[in-house]
Length: 250
Image (cartoon, rainbow, N blue to C red; front, side):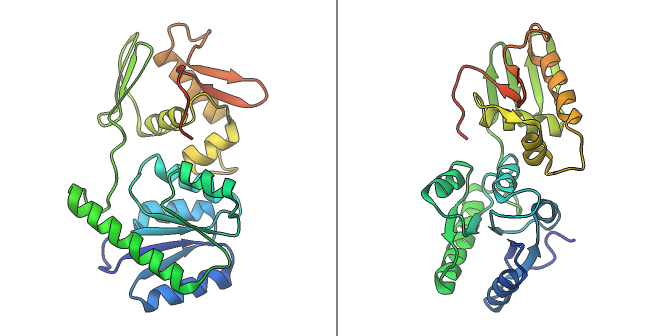
């Protein structure tokens, strides 16, 4: 898809219940928005990257990858894209979890259509103002916090360069994405399957061995003794944990 062929504001609706998705598309289209539907989390991530929407309306209970994992995957690369959760899961804990992971607004199902439309309009306007004021590109992709230090290691997320105890290395895009995932969850164990969901946007297409291989690389880069890791620790029967002595924010 051409990311900017249509001048209308673009809204990606991530909803597996077709009648709800089509109803939302109809009503938003009548307001002048260009609307595309994704029926699951994998399709949502693919459309986010190829279509570059101006807003995402996101359900939580999705087949395969759930909405929270979709949200976290996007926030590893883009912290400014407006995302509105529209879900029947609307307990205080659900809302707090969504806000913790970077959602901009949260509306419970069943919802009032006029209220939903006003929230969408506000988020679209706010995103436009933010892009104008900050001078970011048309996609509004936010820069990752530029520098992170742990132990004797320093990582520059803008350049992809890392200064490690053994020398300088240039990290790949996927290595940077996974490293940010671990940093956001530092002090908390992550299962291999959850790392695949959030870090790659896959459910069963990749083996968990892929995660193990990346951990081997991280230990080689950042640990003084890779066989006795201090930062990238294994958690038996769970997965891995990043520990730099500070508590995570997610």
